[in-house]
Every structure is written in structure tokens, then in C-alpha cells.
Image (cartoon, rainbow, N blue to C red):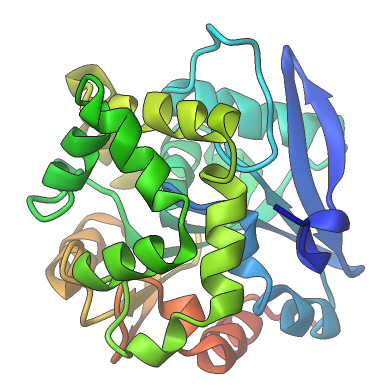
Length: 292
């Protein structure tokens, strides 16, 4: 599948055994943007320009096992490994402290970073994040399990590589409230990142298997004690129509994280940066505005 403009601009950096793909845009105060599963840094394409114009250096890596990041075939892609990659990424770029925005699985990684390395986080934004024991959600689990089935799993993943089928799956999974947000550009970018060839489909299958691993799921619960000590400025930016991680999870995080200063609720689904990129961008730029 032909590379889109966003993906063509990616850079690469070696972090341990991983060749991490990332997008860098803008100058100024650094912001780390962490995507979810099974997506890639492509989800931030409509947010990054606004943050760049607002005086930020945007850094958006593809997570281990997803997008254009490549690792040895037996590499660890668990949440602790993702955390180690992020810390290594910051070290490699010489960034001691950074603003962090995490969505979905990226939100889980952001929680581990805040809980275990609070000195590296300036301000934190969590958006429709995997947290506590809420993932995979009850609605998500059948889709994840289907990708793991012998023979049928491979056929299901192959079917998902069709943009038309993938769009239907996103609709069935209630990824958005407004279906018009599922544009051809969006669907093509999502498919290219993780489903467009046998290698990417195999990566995605292995990544999704980790979503069902109890030891991996446990990591977000284990992070709660650290989060209860995290007092740096935090915003919860949440799509209220998310069928998987609804606003009740934002309420719970707000009660546990003493640094929460703002909770912004938007009438959007899980992929709120696709449904309302202008509002999401503006809220991020406002909350992360560089100090005068």
C-alpha cells in the first residue's frame, strides 16, 4: 500500500534492539504523543500541526509492535517494555522532562511513566485511556479473541486489510459516534499502519495477544499507587460516547490523581481526535501552553 504523506515524513531511531519510527514537528516546548492499539502515530496527524504552531516540538513514536517500528521477532512488547522504550526514546533525544499526551494503550504507558518516572513528566494528558482493569473492554474482547483463532484468525486479519471491511469493523466497534469521521484517508492510514501486508498483520496479531495477557493487564492496576502521588498538572480529555472506556473511567482517574486540574468532556467516541480534531487540538494547545 502506498505511503501517505504523514508516514513518508517519519524518522527512525534505534532504542536497544528496536528501530523506532517517529514523527517530529515544530520547535519549542517538547510534547510526547502516545497512540493506542491497534493504531499508530498516524492518529495525531490532525493535532500535531496546531501544537507545532502553538510553540511545541511534537514527538510521536510508533509503539513497539505497531506501525513502522520494528523489533526482533521475539521482542517484549508488554507495557513495561513500552515504558522502557519511551524512557530510552527521551534519553536518546536528550529530553529530561516533557509534556505527555496518551490515548488508549498510549494512555496506559503514560500512566506508567507518571507513576514510575514522575521527574520526566511536566504536564500529563490522558484521553480515553486503558486504565485499572478496564481493558480490553467487554465489547473489544470478541474482536481481539477472533484475531487469535487458529486459521480463522488469519482469515479475519486478512479481511481487515480491506479498507471497506475495516471501516465496517470500526463502525461495529463504535470507535466513533459520528460515522462521517471514518473518511477514506483515515481508514487507509489505519490499514496501512498495521494490516496492509502479512508482516504487519502478524505483528498486529502478536500485539493483540498481549492485550489478553493477565500479567500485562495487571500493570495499570499496579501503577495506581504511583498515580496517587502524581501531583503534576494533569488534564483528562475524554470522549463521552466511548462504548469501551466511558467517562466513568475519567471520573475514577480524577479521584485518584491529585494533579488533575481539568476534565474536558467532548461528545465524541473513542477516536475523539478524528471526530473533533480542532477542539482536541485547541484544548491541548491551551493546557500545554508554554509558560510565559
